[in-house]
Length: 76
Length: 353
View 1: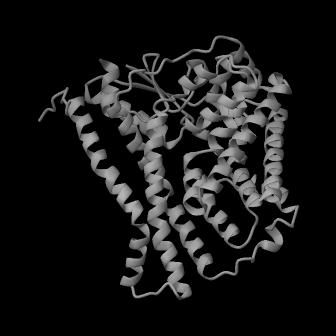
View 2: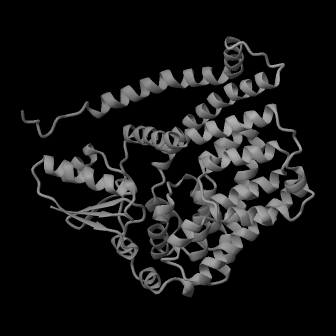
């Protein structure tokens, strides 16, 4: 699954990438991680608050560090 | 051992009940603690064998009284704000502001700046997100000025240390500057001073992400707790440092120490304070020890609040971030208008109070 994390590279963005990657991999889903730090790309994707997360190109979360339970709810 | 893939954490209804129960216990405890602050400080002072009649005793009593008071207030208000913020996701705020005209739109934007979660690291995406949804430039700026400057930590600290009048003054001044500065920037029609890539996106249809609307109360409470961990966890050392400094001043330093250079008679002290504040960058909690020291030593209130606003609202790092989206002239206008507003407000308060 392609995971895109939008954010300028702050601590919260790093942590977000880790949480999403670990949760997906714990479920046996291979992860292809992409980090987007460019503001124009963020704006085009509709991310107004960082960190933002998209799964396979679909934006699922913005402006918060997601919990494991939240990441799992995106898969449902 | 293999973990079950879908380990059900306790069902939502149980978690909600647990939250309500905890709040039902903690709220009266909080009120009780807040009601007995003075007794607590006096008892603690007695335990270490000091009397309030001495300089040291007075200073220590001030510390024992103010520390729990401000930390209690901060925890309570930050928890509430964490919950309130779940009602105002940036997407929601943007929808409320979309297509609003100058004037009313600026008032609304500045007010929403208080309750919408904001971090200067996402200032640029937020800025563009607003513009692309048809929020006018001037209205966007009102939001961008108010969001960092008028925040709950600043208000709680001012309330806890100087009383509700000072906190209300700061709130009113902050909103006024955000509203008027945004209206001015809107009138100047500076859309062409946005970077070209921003103009392109702002004209087209910006992508929109609908946030999950059905936020449960468990999630709201959890957001409140998360907010407390994040904010109070970060600012408590500054708060304690500020109170310790204040306690020292309270007990020892003569009251009119700063009066000569930052008193109301020194007219140049307001612009000087604002200029001094621009290169300084810290959050509301970090600036409070300095504010405490200045006011304690006889500096005029308008001058000190102007200094505080300048430090929080006009920061070099944020301008560097905004430079990615704004051309230099728009940045200079933004900084100039806000700085003038702060200076003006500082003068008015020094004259009136």
